[in-house]
Image (tube, rainbow, N blue to C red; front, side):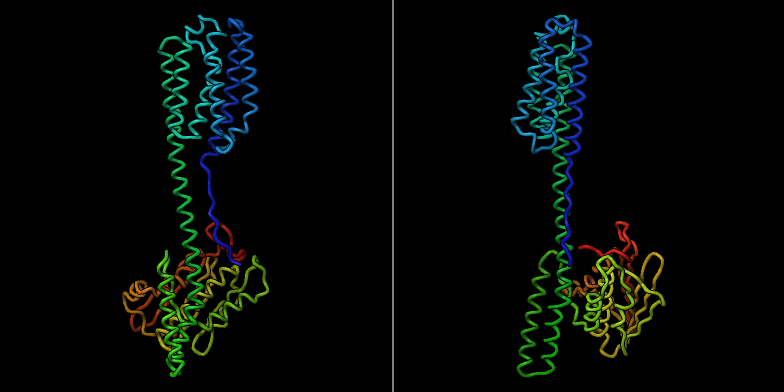
Length: 412
């Protein structure tokens, strides 16, 4: 079964939270190391030791809180900043007055920046500005006067935190835009697939009923007229969305191809021989030339190629006439499979394909080119008026993700 394309969301915040966790641990060790190196110079070392014990317990206990944005609540941020501000304001009480006036570090030292950065990552630059302003006020109160080094450190923390908060907001906006673009792309591809399925089934049946009803006449003609109206209404409905619906007449050969794929005994990951899927297309008016060895593709890739060939043959019957001859050539090259469908019809007038797309008849655009594009391949239509039309389908044996389409079914 075909599954819908999944949109993978990537979080730009997760690496930031991980970096913040590591920073808090390293900053705690650094602050404790500074205290241990100058312990004898403190006026009340026992008070500083008690604070560092609290800081260590708080840092280790709250590691899960800085793992992601959901766990980092406003209450936690307020408590975390309170621990940092308390350490700054306790510095002149625990440390010697001379060290404080000489520009010695506060008790939490650079650990304070971790609390401010948590505000920046969680709430952006506005939250960062609030937290850094409170830290600036605490530093000025601790020092007692706006010394040059104090002002320098305050401005550094203030600017850095606001810049990081702004970058986080921009990254979040970009992430939302990217996620929306991926969702739109997935929805567009799904709509293209549904449009192809509609044209391969419902629209073809309605077109056949309309043609047969006109030939039979009587009540059948009225039924054909109603079928034609429903075909136009359904085509308008589908083409009114993101991707227009294609229009291709009924193709009995393609139906046989699809049944051949579905009834094949292979599993989803087992390659199938493309030759066996194209064999039902051959007939009195269609010649099939193929290699002597199996041409193996993944079931999904083979099914799409066979469907594109069926759509090309259907175009031959509709536009070149029931008596037109067609030739199918299958080439198995080392890196790709090439299938060419050529006819001896009158060819396509210049600009006709663009005109058909404008009218909502997108059999070539979606049923042929769309299928090959989804496989990472290409479809080229070459036509010279009076010399027939040639449709060249190229399918790479290795997918865009590096997987071999010969042995792995495409999951969509």
